[in-house]
Image (cartoon, rainbow, N blue to C red; front, side, top):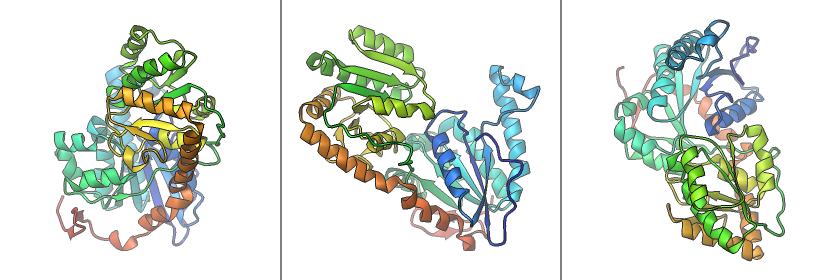
Length: 386
């Protein structure tokens, strides 16, 4: 999924022409995965003609060589991206724009919003970052940009509440997981085989996971931990593992999403130490694969993990509580079996069948297309001028 196909079908009578603007799978991460899943599902709908415009386009010919030059890469890619928006947006009725926070919000969603506004298109802003509160506090200009969207869609009730505090009305439509891709494996007897699958950045708290694992390994000397992902903290985390004298810890780097299934299948317990988060796909994928989850209660995680029912929740930074919960799973298989079963049932909320109608109804709300409007948190529509 790199760029809109040149032979995209022409919209039939009554079809909504939908353009999805977001990261391609060339960028490893949850947004790219969600964009790919959504596009694949929507292209099966007869009521839609669906195109895709990547925020990270692959440049043609000689321009591709410029992408190897650090600062030139950003400039050239941005120019090509904006040019693609100007050429493509005019063909569609609804522009569905994936969004993260901070500087990436300026580089990717903002041009798409402004150009969609220029052409008078219906704008669906799909915001995914768990850092929304800090983003909107530090970058208040983003609030006005967000108000240009006809709809703000977020994957969790947590972000609905966050946006409301800034006077923005958002609706929640869950992320999806593919049950036919993430195969459930029954774990009738857990082994001390652990997995952490988050980017190696400070706010994902992988250091908490390592400290918890050090305590677990005091009880289970044969315990192993696979740390998947990469980021600015990798060297620091590898040094911490050495200082803690951990055995059986393997840093495997960034794993393509197609290969991550083998990591879930090989592990028996999933550990997550987030300090800031929204609705992490990795927890839902662990649910679907049959891994019991022990996680911190950061951000929107309590909206998807219910303590002692679908997983164990501990406070942020509390590696001792994380270790204790993990040891409880290993030592009480009946508790593990109950949590695995309830977490698997919880996955139904995140299936395509559960969210399909919500997306289709949103795209087909034609009566809202004719006039631009600024939507406040109380649901009122106020006219405005750009």
